[in-house]
Amino acid sequence: MSIFDILSFIGGLSLFIFGMNVMGISLERAAGSRLKAILSKLTSSPIKGLILGAAVTAVIQSSSATTVMAIGFVNSGLMELIQAVGIIIGANLGTTITPWLLSLTGLEGSSIYIQLLKPTSFAPILALIGVVLLLASKRDKRRSIGASLLGFAVLMFGMETMSEAVKPLAEVEAFTNLFVLFSNPIIGVLVGIFVTAAVQSSSASIGILQALTVTGSVNMASAIPIIMGQNIGTCVTALISSVGTNKNAKRTALVHLYFNLFGTAAAMIIFYSLKMIFGFDLSVQANYFSIAIIHTAFNLFCTVILFPFSKQLARLAVLTVPEGKDKEETLLLDERMLLTPAIAAAQSRNAVCAMAKITKKTVDYACRLAESFDEKTFGKTCELERKTDKFDDALEGYLARLSACELSDSDSRDVFLLLRSVTEFERLADHARNIAEGAQELNEKKQKFSETGRREMNVLISAVREVTDTAVSAFCENSTEKARSVEPLEEVVDMLTKELRSRHIKRLAKAECGVTSGFIVNDMLTDFERVSDYCSNIALAVLERDEVKLEPHDYSKRLKKGNDEQYNALFRYYNEKYDLNKTDSK
Image (cartoon, rainbow, N blue to C red; front, side, top):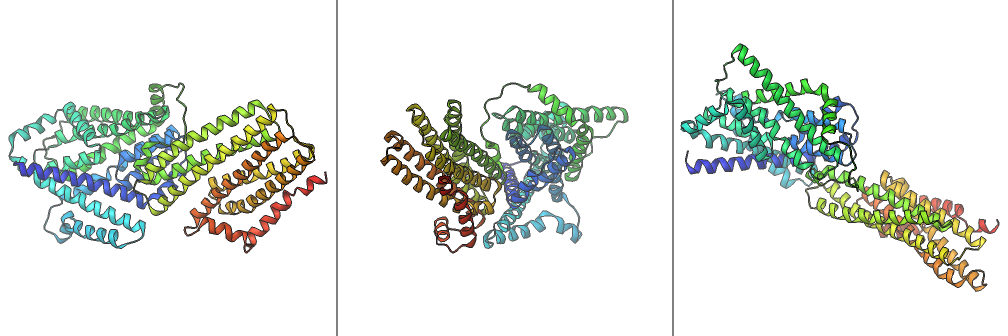
């Protein structure tokens, strides 16, 4: 084997891994929104988890990616450990598709039909279709499909190149002797583990083994233990992925390891026991198809014998990583989810929604303090505001990294709007804290509202609570209907703050209120107004997500010109609901 053959093998392996990566990412992007919908409807049924894991792995062509996704969901608290067990077992089953696709390279025969099935015949056509879709189509989904076809063609060309490059090894005696050494079950398993751990992909290591079968040196005695070891080696990706996660996520990675360890051990004990009894002839030369058959049979065997023990695997993982005090878990985010951008975008939205709910609570506490000051409530308000700052810092960094990933046009727009919304929620919480501090200052200086002033302030507080609740609900539920009701209520809040400020000045002039309280109340009114302004911005972001061509500022101006009947009706409703004149009659 010459240096040129070695270079050809390295080039073929590089094309193979690159093509597999491109195909997986592109298929994931093409199925992005559907994938999110499927995963969001997970149930606790292990059978459904098994089917889901197998299906997702078959689509994205990577059991490692599926397992990492499961770890990310568990780490985010969006999936229970027992649900992840089914998905992980299913992922092992789903990865058996890859060797069958690769086995097409080993087809032999002069028949026209067999020739058409060979990758050298159809891969160029797929590559051409892929290039046309990728370059000519403007639709994101078609471009993703084109990229996946091109990735598959590159993968197949890489496989052909590897096969051709290793053919001269058939004449190298040292290479043949090496595979004789691998026929030792323990050594074979260790080789499978090492190679798979090195390339971080069981599919890639299976492809390498299939390519080496053309040398004639790979027999069943060496292929079987190597394939068994490959399943253990693929656990390395999951174990690395679990570093820095919470306890349940670590347990998920351990379930993956235990499943493959126990499956391999059981398969080796049963298979080699039967070999001793019946004396199987394992000197038969392996080929593409026999590798695919062994791989599928082995994974089916592991699934059948271990799936009924899913709960026991989960319990063993819990025993390995016992209960204890976790570090504070902030956000529903996981860096590992960036490997699957479509899912990461959905999880980012959940994280921003969690921040929104904390912000809403912050505003509610601030409103309570404006009604009646309490030190305990003030402390909670400040604590929640600090928490929103942490969310803001973490989310902005995470979303910035996510925006640099390969996203569909829809997800890219969502990430941009999420970034904008995070800023609005953080500022909203800041103004809530300002209101709380204003209430604290009034309390410390023993300043109180007059009876009339208190009733008027309570009307404004009720309106602010409703506009905040509506904006947060609109965002979390992605409800355009609720979002459209925020702007008219925001205008009512603006009118209320102006009227309250005017009435407060009049009371100051009549010496009905102290001058000190006048400045504090004025600042509080400004903060209430700012809260409603940011709620309006959040609602407009929801509408902009739904209506791509919407210009938020133009939209707001257009509404206030009085040409929108829905807006006018809602404005009249809220104006009557929060009418200050009603307080005058009390």
